[in-house]
Length: 65
Image (cartoon, one colour):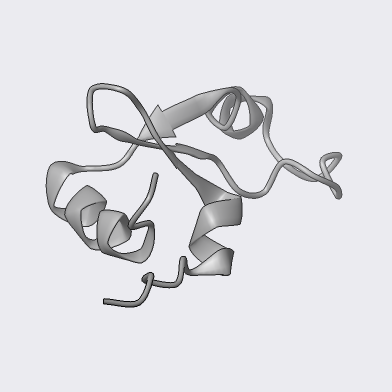
């Protein structure tokens, strides 16, 4: 059997943790921050975890993660 190719777009956006959760960073924090409300920017800090159903989909794109 040949190796399965990793989806490179997904590999750049998601990481699979040791416990199997899929971790991601919030979007919308790179530039044009002056017009965005502080509460919104605070909520986008750090990283978060995908819902279980969404995580299963992403794990198929990252076969060796």
